[in-house]
Length: 475
View (tube, rainbow, N blue to C red):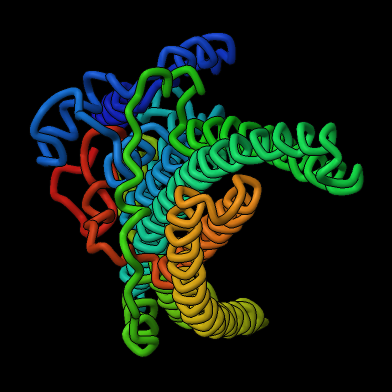
């Protein structure tokens, strides 16, 4: 009976050590309320930026691309989802490390034919234990597979972080382009309005035809529509920027945005260096490689399963006042199958993982070639547009001198000024194309060309950086 008491105590201890369920409901209304309260003045964001020496004063005088990128890393829900996936993979590692629990069975019996006067207990009480022993290194392969899957999930955080950064850069560039375009169009509109007014006066004097006045009015109306379109694009880009940051649009009210990083003169980038950076640094490539290694470990597990596990079965039996001890040894006989089916599946999955990696690598190389070619053409277009602006500026200066000397009319001067504004718009468009091409090149590398260390700026759960390396105190 002492044995049964010990077993009951062990069972009670095991039950009291079990995890308990905690209900954590999702409340959409509360989530919306918390989202609407988000701002760039968040105290925890401030602490994170200051601790990483991203800012020296608070609030910063201007929010540039680098600071906005860190803010997006802090707020954007896509990164929360990626971190949650990594947490699932890390929990899988705990599962992989677990050893199988032993089992115990109790089978009490009562012999009703045993006479009470014989001095022998009519009870038969048997305890049988089953202690499983894994063979062929299955646990080690299982742990290795889980480690690679955890590493793949961790690297996917970096891939998602880059996507977040790319959207921030694109929306900030769109906002910059819309604002600059609107400014140039408004200055052009002022010239066209003055031009249309002069044409109307000359029409009344009989100096120009109605057709010429009509053409001037058409150009004026088209420019007004272009200004309205630029205003619309600026509002849309502002909303897109807030979305890319994981903030409500009102959070950008009163925020001074800096476009300095998007106004730098473009530089030539060697395609070979770009290719090397992409193959060595792209998080999605490294993640796919980790998934391949996990598939290899999964295949090793299935091969190891050809060797059956051993089950030790020590037992004790209290048989009508007699104590009996025994031990059993059992294992599965690989007679009907040798695990060939699961092995074939694991081999096919490994081949699939290899094909996915090779396809991704080929796609990355294609992206690099396309982005590099587009960037080179965009640089050439900027040089052409600069020459046009330079020539039109020279012509405008000469025309202005002639106008002051009374050699040409104001209408002729306005025509040359409109030409310069048109060339300036073309130059702005070419520069935006360069920045778009540069963004595509950075996306191909998953690395900024300005040297910004974006990987070390990805906060884990809003506090601890987590992408480039494992840290000992990750939550």
